[in-house]
Length: 46
Image 1 (cartoon, one colour):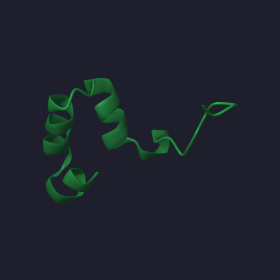
Image 2: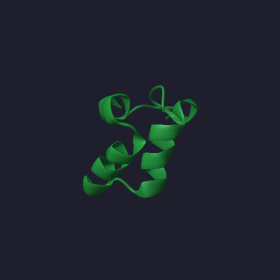
Image 3: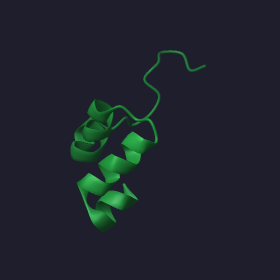
C-alpha cells in the first residue's frame, strides 16, 4: 500500500507479482479497498 501511495499502482503491482502474489489478487488488493479483509472470517479461529 505504501508503494501505491508513493509511486502508483503499476510499480506496486510489479512488486507484488515479483513476490509471488497472483495478478488477480494483487489487483483486487491494490484497486478495490472494499474487498480488503477486515479480520478473521472463520467461525472458529485456528
